[in-house]
Image (cartoon, rainbow, N blue to C red; front, side, top):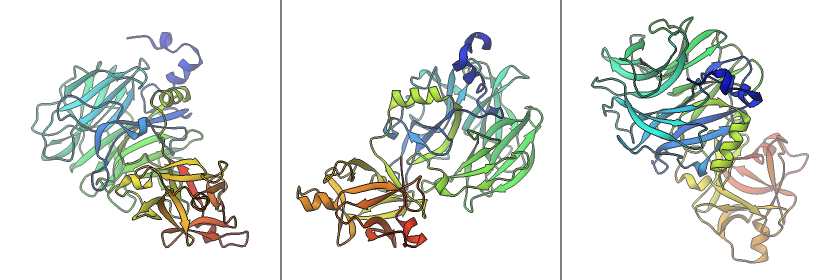
Length: 457
């Protein structure tokens, strides 16, 4: 094995060294983050079972890479993946693990997981499937961590054993040859989706209680199988949740806990705490974070700021944007039956929420919103309501379809959009429909919030 000292020379090496072991978190957090995921949407039109990547500078707001298309797709087994996870190994390189399952046939008994090696997540080599056991059951949601007491990596995953799902473990040095499976954690009832974080010398294992679809926290002073005891139960956003991920915030003594809902109609939730040991997680408002489009089952790994920049340079940022409502932050601007409106995420056709922000048709200093799935059609106001219509080339259409982006009326870090030809009017939602209304300093707080949006991905 390459020595850590030899590999990590220099400032960049020091930054990587602080991230070794992926989730063995120091009190100082990462400079950036990468999220691995697959995609599904309510009607499954957005389903894609390849490896997708997104990056973030704050661990909350995500930039999908490669136009939200996969960067690599399995070529063996079922030909698809779920539940991908990225581990930074002790030599500074990465390994990617994922469930071998394309689609939603939960009855499939698959003893294998997908594995790739990667120097920098800009290319993937050594693709293989690794057999974890010979039992008549699955191998779901594999994750891995470094166990210094064994000088080996532990691969944890969900499998049925003793009549219900438990968290199993295999040990490896190369993610090719693995030890015999052992039970890592079994609370006596169905448990899936284990994720590990070592914080302040304590090892935390968060899982999904599969009997009531809540998240549960365990901890141990060691990493030994069977050593974890439950200390926090019932973490829920008020609906079923799974796929926990603990992530250090970019500054301060704070951590985020991410969770995903289980159905294609699902979405991510995020909690925050300054004390993982106490387990007092506070659910964040949707305004605080944005998940990648159609993303499912996140695997989040700290990286350096330089690595994030290199990933964006390699894979590119999306050509489209999404607009999130300020006071209904679970909703996004879309067109439906040619009407501009906001609707709660997720929905299909998911492309209805994707916009190209182009120079204003009537004034290049402004902006026009061109539909991604109906190129040449733009949001324009007509009788003060916003509609999607084809550009007829007239001066009136161009003016109606041009808006000027300003500081958000409700929050200056967000955006509002003033009409080009009715400059006292701003785009706002009213009963979910978009329109332009006069909004001045005397406008109500609600009116200003209705006219405030976040331009993101």
